[in-house]
Image (cartoon, rainbow, N blue to C red; front, side, top):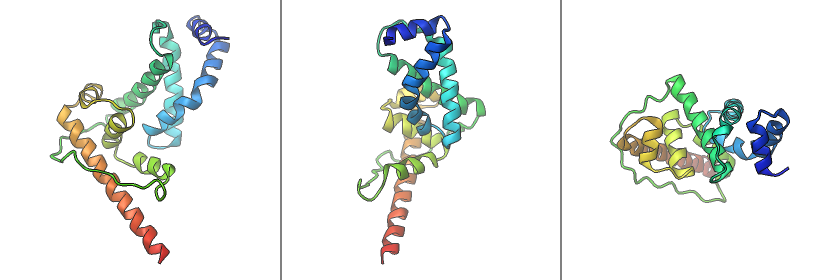
Length: 180
């Protein structure tokens, strides 16, 4: 069955088509959920909630533009909505320079470790970091999505980068000491 037919069947609440769509996209969407979640279990919850939203709103998809892009946006918005509803987005404007560079060498820092330390960031920093660095949103878009100012978005990104830089430096120091 073609993707277009699958989408059309989902629009009429065909549960078999919904299951097929889930199988087709769950493995692509779960890493996005993981980026925006505090842990694996929360990522699973976000994925399930996102698919419920996708199935509820699929009639709004007009077959223009990328379907995958459309559902990715729903996944991100679903994760952000969880934080909005939990009122954990107490994002404050901090006077921090945005120009913090994170220096990591692919050989000494694994992708798994990077994901782990990004997940450990405070929610307000993790969300801005992911939206800006990993998903390419502008500070204006982030400000609109999180209901904050552009300056707050920039300062939260800078603070996230500082925390990650310090964590990576500490990791490298530990690795160096262990090798002695």
